[in-house]
Amino acid sequence: MEIPIFTPVRQYLNLKEEIDNVIQKILNRGDFILGEEVKEFEQSVARYLGVKHAIGVASGTDALQIALMAIGLKPGDEVITTPFTFVATAETIVLLGGKPVYVDIDERTYNINPELIEDKITEKTKAIIPVHLYGQPAEMEKILDIARRYNLYVIEDSAQAFGAEYKGRKVCTFGDIACISFFPTKNLGAFGDAGMVVTNSDDLAEKIRMIRVHGSKKRYHHELLGVNSRLDTLQAGILLVKLKYVDEWNKRRIEIANRYSNALKDIDSIVTPYAEPYNKHIYHQFTIRTNRRDELIEFLKGRGIQTAVHYPIPLHLQKAFSYFGYKEGDFPIAEKCSREVLSLPMFPELRDDEVDYVIGSIVDFFKNKS
Image 1 (cartoon, one colour):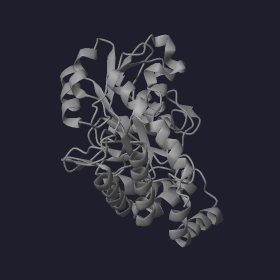
Image 2 (cartoon, helix red, strand yellow):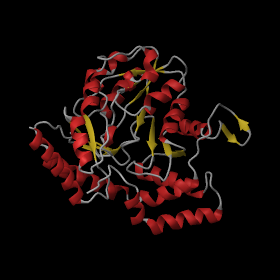
Image 3 (tube, helix red, strand yellow):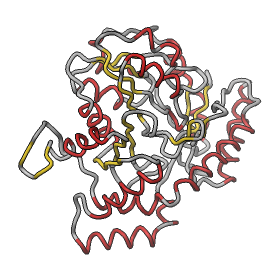
Image 4 (cartoon, helix red, strand yellow):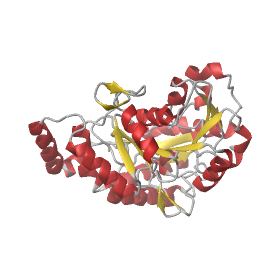
């Protein structure tokens, strides 16, 4: 049996008629940039999340950069974030001349540990970027309390958590700004790069809308420096179709996660994902930990099962950021997790028999290797 870690094909085939119709409609009309589906999708996401403004951009990475530009990040400013995330979280800070100041993670949730944040705040600190990693919300109440006391912006990196909830409220609604990715592998995925910035601030929303179109409200009148980052109409149309199903898909992800966890939780050599009881974890990834990861990867590969490591090198140890002077041992929990994490196949169209095949293969590995 061959099992991919993710495939967009099954989802497309399930929605083929709806998606093909909206694509053909847009092709016939020809408005490929900021067309009517973009506005409709923005309004639909704003309603879904319960926020005032949702602004489509070209990618989740652009969403982060535009958010930082909107809060006025300047060279030398510091932004507190996690070292255990995708590179875009820190990359965008550095591209604008800022410095990522890392805080180690909670070993259970893999999210930034709020108890360690306050010690990293200086007079240069501008913002905190918590990441809702793998689909589990970060500890937002504690983070917001710290931010309010020090007058800091909070930007939620919600790239992996569209539809997740913290204490009964959807993520993307806590910070000053939230950033979303609609990369094809995400829980709500486009057919290419796409992203969104959301906020309840009228002032920030106005800046974000200007920044995404070269800093202008009126064409050829540029009031501030911006970028070219617009959600194209074809992607918005596809995402509009898919948005109707995202809660159903997230529910299925939770079912798959429970199936994995119940079967694997008693294997001593595995740590299954932990979800805070007040969180709705929507399992963008189902990520286990084991100190025999590399052996397990090869064994599962031999069984036709694809896996992935999210993420093998923490950001503070990445060569691109070496000039900041971070070194091995600075963030021991993130470093330990990076050596042990392994993501198993996870997408809503995954069948129960496929999940059971993955489970059975993992059980066989530890039984035979014990």
